Length: 184
Image (cartoon, rainbow, N blue to C red):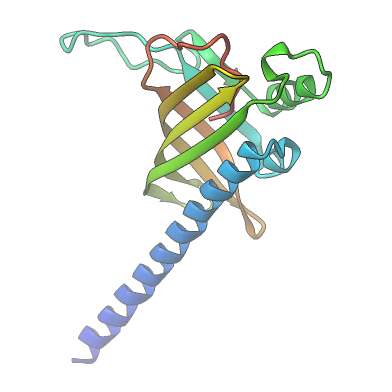
């Protein structure tokens, strides 16, 4: 009988820990969306691990019978294939006043949904899936929506979660915008 109570207690502790971690990471994603929507890019950079890999492959339409391996950062053309230094440079460009696609500043609103922690641990990293929809509106008549699936790897560094890897899979084969300067 005591073994049953002990195992139930262990199971409920593990569930509480799982729920706590899920809540922390979900809140992390919501905070990230708010910072990016508010153009608080330097604060956003502080949420990233030093080894960040930020990758969005070009989409290709494949027939179901096509058995080629899935694209990887090393084997496919990319919209983004950035490390921390690349992300810092992209953000510094905004401060130059020369980025025509960001002047006047666009109005951006992100929605993050379907957050799921898949596997892993805090040291090696937790794999987190989510979807993001981004509305970008600029000037009087320029409006575009981007939708993507994300596969993130989070690591616990000190007492904070840091994004170590983001793979972004756009639902668009062709982007119907003059540029893709938003962060996903």
